[in-house]
Length: 247
Image (cartoon, rainbow, N blue to C red):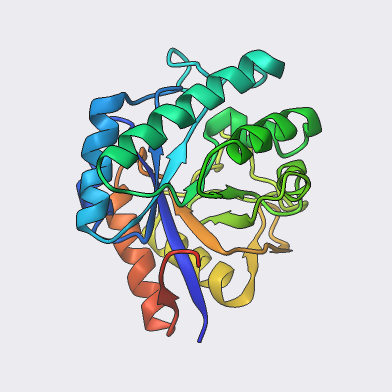
């Protein structure tokens, strides 16, 4: 049977978290870089535990003013120190609640910059590798981040996006371009099924793009996020796809 993980980025101050946690199988919790604090981490982790949802950290550039979406915001040891602090804080909060940190997924520009920046990807992977418990590293497949994960002995989880447009080379269409984010629930659900069942997506230019996916992301900060999550889960289950956290 085909199976897939559904993840959402949570703890960012959006109103959909509780609903999303009843649908997804994994969550990525903001840990202070672009959003969130210890109180929001605690609340999100508690709700995730109550719903049986796998818990992950969602570190970012320390850029709250730009919500972590300004490219090239920081690099080198300064960035490593920030990421390590974010991850240590999150791990401590999770530990106090009896939760384990299953995975780490970079946020925003940190995530997209690491697609092509080998030095940046290595900083991220080194910070994740410093955590106890051997968490998984989530990112786009076939990128510098996947290469860095392998170099640092981390298991890599290939992620695809149900609500984002893809370029012909498999990268995401930048958010600054028109049509980069899908709003139509039917289109989002169809893209989720195509990714999970066929490992492909219809690109922005109309071509079929092969995309490897172990987990599918539903952005928790977009209007209608909970409706999109429910539509995706129903479409997948209607096709016989089993939903569970990455094993």
